[in-house]
Length: 137
Image (cartoon, rainbow, N blue to C red; front, side, top):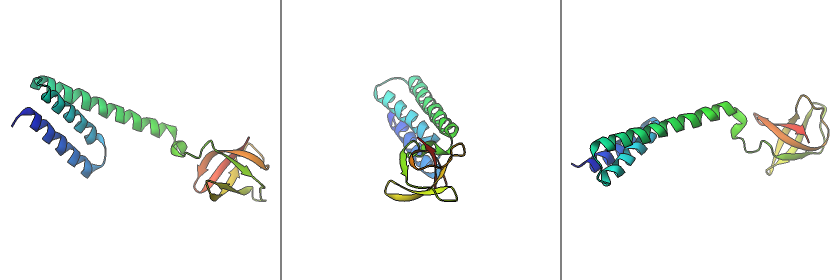
Protein backbone atom coordinates (compact mmCIF):
# COMPACT_ATOMS: atom_id res chain seq x y z
CA UNK A 1 0.00 0.00 0.00
CA UNK A 2 1.43 3.39 -0.95
CA UNK A 3 1.76 6.48 1.26
CA UNK A 4 -1.15 8.28 -0.38
CA UNK A 5 -3.60 5.49 0.46
CA UNK A 6 -2.38 5.33 4.06
CA UNK A 7 -2.87 9.08 4.54
CA UNK A 8 -6.39 8.97 3.04
CA UNK A 9 -7.26 6.03 5.31
CA UNK A 10 -5.91 7.96 8.30
CA UNK A 11 -8.02 10.97 7.24
CA UNK A 12 -11.12 8.79 7.05
CA UNK A 13 -10.40 7.19 10.42
CA UNK A 14 -9.96 10.63 12.05
CA UNK A 15 -13.22 11.88 10.53
CA UNK A 16 -15.03 8.75 11.76
CA UNK A 17 -13.58 9.20 15.25
CA UNK A 18 -14.65 12.85 15.13
CA UNK A 19 -18.22 11.85 14.37
CA UNK A 20 -18.19 9.74 17.53
CA UNK A 21 -16.61 12.39 19.77
CA UNK A 22 -18.03 15.67 18.43
CA UNK A 23 -15.16 17.90 19.59
CA UNK A 24 -13.91 19.11 16.16
CA UNK A 25 -10.27 18.69 17.25
CA UNK A 26 -9.98 15.35 15.47
CA UNK A 27 -11.43 17.00 12.38
CA UNK A 28 -8.59 19.53 12.50
CA UNK A 29 -6.11 16.65 12.65
CA UNK A 30 -7.92 15.04 9.70
CA UNK A 31 -7.26 18.23 7.73
CA UNK A 32 -3.56 17.74 8.50
CA UNK A 33 -3.72 14.12 7.32
CA UNK A 34 -5.46 15.23 4.12
CA UNK A 35 -2.71 17.80 3.54
CA UNK A 36 -0.14 15.01 3.97
CA UNK A 37 -2.06 12.92 1.42
CA UNK A 38 -1.85 15.80 -1.06
CA UNK A 39 1.88 16.05 -0.29
CA UNK A 40 2.19 12.32 -1.04
CA UNK A 41 0.31 12.84 -4.32
CA UNK A 42 2.92 15.46 -5.24
CA UNK A 43 5.60 12.81 -4.80
CA UNK A 44 7.37 14.33 -1.80
CA UNK A 45 9.10 12.06 0.71
CA UNK A 46 7.69 10.56 3.90
CA UNK A 47 9.50 13.07 6.12
CA UNK A 48 7.85 15.99 4.32
CA UNK A 49 4.48 14.27 4.51
CA UNK A 50 4.78 13.86 8.28
CA UNK A 51 5.94 17.45 8.74
CA UNK A 52 3.04 18.68 6.58
CA UNK A 53 0.54 16.66 8.61
CA UNK A 54 1.98 17.98 11.87
CA UNK A 55 2.13 21.61 10.77
CA UNK A 56 -1.27 21.80 9.08
CA UNK A 57 -3.07 19.71 11.72
CA UNK A 58 -1.36 21.49 14.61
CA UNK A 59 -2.07 24.93 13.17
CA UNK A 60 -5.72 23.99 12.60
CA UNK A 61 -6.03 22.84 16.23
CA UNK A 62 -4.44 26.05 17.53
CA UNK A 63 -6.70 28.24 15.38
CA UNK A 64 -9.79 26.28 16.44
CA UNK A 65 -8.82 26.66 20.11
CA UNK A 66 -8.29 30.42 19.72
CA UNK A 67 -11.68 30.76 18.02
CA UNK A 68 -13.38 28.94 20.89
CA UNK A 69 -11.61 31.04 23.53
CA UNK A 70 -12.54 34.26 21.73
CA UNK A 71 -16.24 33.30 21.72
CA UNK A 72 -16.12 32.51 25.46
CA UNK A 73 -14.63 35.95 26.23
CA UNK A 74 -17.34 37.74 24.25
CA UNK A 75 -19.99 36.50 26.69
CA UNK A 76 -23.33 34.76 26.30
CA UNK A 77 -24.95 37.59 24.36
CA UNK A 78 -22.22 37.71 21.70
CA UNK A 79 -24.06 35.35 19.38
CA UNK A 80 -27.44 37.11 19.56
CA UNK A 81 -27.99 38.85 16.25
CA UNK A 82 -30.69 41.04 17.80
CA UNK A 83 -28.27 42.99 20.02
CA UNK A 84 -27.83 46.46 18.60
CA UNK A 85 -31.13 46.40 16.72
CA UNK A 86 -33.69 49.14 17.40
CA UNK A 87 -37.28 48.79 18.52
CA UNK A 88 -40.04 51.32 19.15
CA UNK A 89 -41.65 51.35 22.59
CA UNK A 90 -45.17 52.76 22.65
CA UNK A 91 -45.65 52.77 26.43
CA UNK A 92 -44.22 51.31 29.63
CA UNK A 93 -46.42 49.73 32.28
CA UNK A 94 -46.27 50.27 36.05
CA UNK A 95 -43.89 47.31 36.54
CA UNK A 96 -41.31 48.89 34.22
CA UNK A 97 -41.90 46.51 31.33
CA UNK A 98 -43.20 47.08 27.82
CA UNK A 99 -44.51 44.92 25.01
CA UNK A 100 -42.59 45.50 21.79
CA UNK A 101 -42.80 43.90 18.37
CA UNK A 102 -39.48 42.68 17.01
CA UNK A 103 -38.97 40.36 14.04
CA UNK A 104 -42.67 39.66 13.84
CA UNK A 105 -43.05 38.53 17.46
CA UNK A 106 -44.16 40.19 20.69
CA UNK A 107 -41.40 40.56 23.28
CA UNK A 108 -41.42 41.71 26.86
CA UNK A 109 -38.86 44.45 27.31
CA UNK A 110 -37.21 46.05 30.33
CA UNK A 111 -35.22 49.25 30.45
CA UNK A 112 -31.59 49.38 31.58
CA UNK A 113 -31.16 50.43 35.16
CA UNK A 114 -29.44 53.73 34.34
CA UNK A 115 -32.37 55.00 32.29
CA UNK A 116 -35.93 55.71 33.34
CA UNK A 117 -38.51 54.15 31.03
CA UNK A 118 -39.88 56.53 28.41
CA UNK A 119 -41.60 55.83 25.08
CA UNK A 120 -39.74 56.09 21.80
CA UNK A 121 -36.88 54.42 19.99
CA UNK A 122 -34.67 52.05 21.99
CA UNK A 123 -31.65 49.87 21.21
CA UNK A 124 -31.47 46.24 22.34
CA UNK A 125 -28.53 45.94 24.77
CA UNK A 126 -28.95 42.34 25.92
CA UNK A 127 -31.34 39.42 26.03
CA UNK A 128 -32.15 37.94 29.42
CA UNK A 129 -34.16 34.79 28.96
CA UNK A 130 -37.17 35.88 26.92
CA UNK A 131 -36.86 39.59 27.74
CA UNK A 132 -35.14 42.32 25.77
CA UNK A 133 -33.05 44.78 27.77
CA UNK A 134 -33.43 48.16 26.10
CA UNK A 135 -31.55 51.44 26.21
CA UNK A 136 -33.12 54.73 25.14
CA UNK A 137 -31.62 56.19 21.97
